[in-house]
Length: 382
Image (cartoon, rainbow, N blue to C red):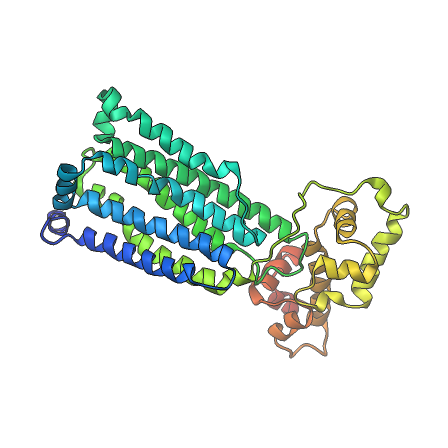
């Protein structure tokens, strides 16, 4: 433990500060990526928001670098004053909201200005005016020791709240996807969900340091304070590569709310005939074999609106479109797995034949419906 303590103390020295290197590396990484996305011509409204998000992450790391580096901090405090850091702490109020706006923009296909977007600024100005460490001292001074530390902590609370809102938005978006498309393989925002959860976790970690500085062993203190800086280096690279790789596939959905339903008089009287027609057309035309079948395309075959099809499935079959289509796929997959003619056929060829795009989706849905894996099902039926 003494060796680790000395190593951390050496890395934390003024002459060679390993933490300074991490912070500067993250800052430069973010600036380069922000410039790249700001100039990216494809879907500029989406990538401009993303560039802003990456930039404020970089500015946050630069802010930490300045406040952690004693010579620079001393110089700026002497020449400008510590109040400067009260203002620069505003970047921590922007990180979560910009991630949330990126999520909203990439899942809706457009960016909208709303009065709610000014809430982080309002919270920042209120916190800036209070300056509780200077005003009250006491416990505030013992925990936060400077006004800018308190303001930054509130900023991370705001960002963490927006991170949670982003997770909830993506959960709602995924449920809505299942009402519109039959395969989630390419459009599943699982990567964005991971990014949102990871950044939210980092922001929650940022809230903790003022509460344990000087109250826990030095090794634990330094690991907890600077682990997030290492995580950010990896996380920024991941979110950038994922955005370029998977972001283009995310589908903007119609702007109707999930609870919106057509009036009963808008649906023809013979509901059972309509439901039977849906099953008959799907089965006879084998539309489920189309990997990217949408509810709009299916409704066109029925001569109905997508809204009416969704209403019939949700209300009278207790299914969304995703579940409806994959029921047919699983049923045919079971037939092929039992068939002697397909006995020697690879399972990959079978799931592609019935309309699945990936092995993981097929295995997950098959096991959920049948209670066992495709390979075991085949073995037990022969």
